[in-house]
Length: 247
Image 1 (cartoon, rainbow, N blue to C red):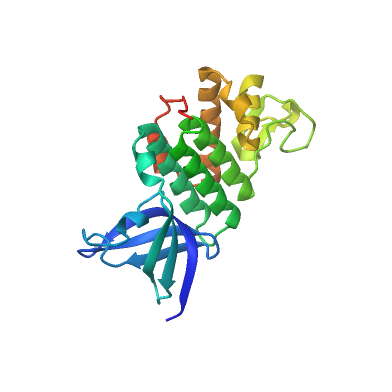
Image 2: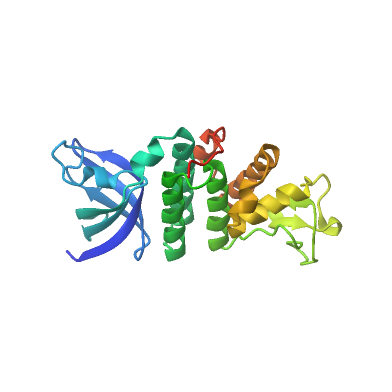
């Protein structure tokens, strides 16, 4: 069987038999990989802890017929324990890996891999509030996938903004001339925060008030759910009550 090596971030795991696990990973070079890690549930396993969700590892695999087999795993980023130690970070990370899993259904993307690893690292280090980090990740991940939202110019006609009507189905803010009846309106503070999250303007994002953050999160959730078509189960459990960052 062909042997190959890659860097991966673990998205999820499932039990298999008495001691094995099926590990779903997003890799740097080979897209999404589903592989069997034999014996990792035994206490004597040498690399079981390196193949938990949110962990980044260098793995060596055998190519199998339906599932590959993990032969070795070396830790590159031990983010699991730090993320699990904070409920807000833990729920945000679950939404991130579920999003990555859905966005890379058929193939992978180096940009998606790097974005997810960076977001998980940021959560583990408490660089920013977990809710802000999640919303920024979701907007960027959707943009990489081809669904970049517009928060300034009209997403339909390209007419320069600012515009206040936001329609997820149309790709962001739209001019009044093409806005459907009853389209929700966003204030300028919320639009500015959304633009900051999309571009990584963290000083601006962290200066936003709680009401503005809450409105922006609702917009991000609606935009994400629409474009993924299938709802994110983990998104409804995200804890946004701890906005402060430790770092």
